[in-house]
Image (cartoon, rainbow, N blue to C red; front, side):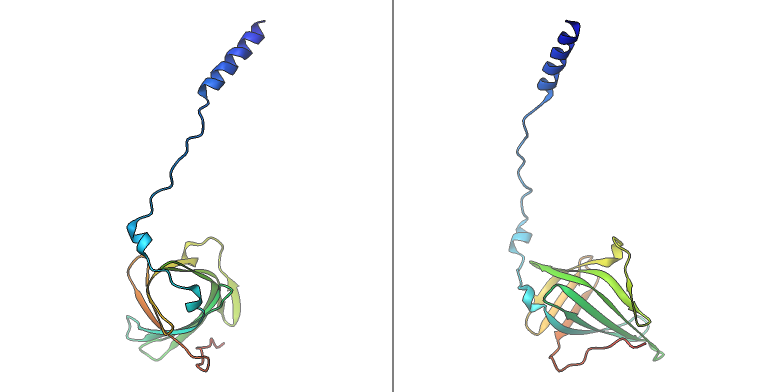
Length: 165
């Protein structure tokens, strides 16, 4: 009898503690997010070239190829003020959501061999705000706001910078 009373008391207490699931409303979407331009992913597919000055007086030429399947290969050639240079490539996945362009680096080329990036490493994930995207021009800014990049579309006859051994 005592066990039955204890079980009944436990059942009453447990039922008294259970509350129905509260329906929560999703966070409101900001006006800025609602008004963000939405570009077609297809505009980014193809070959792009950009060039930027380095702090030492040299420059970096970047040629990018973004494929329709969401993969990419980015080639970099940095020429330093003393005319020495460094070349490398990185590969991974890319995407475009409204006005946010993102890349996930899966690896890079080192001495002619592909080296996989460590999974989950923060430096493998980059996000950019698209400022302008047309058939011929791609202007974007890293999310931290520190750098703006401008790239021009390459024609199918243009040669990409190739990493040499």
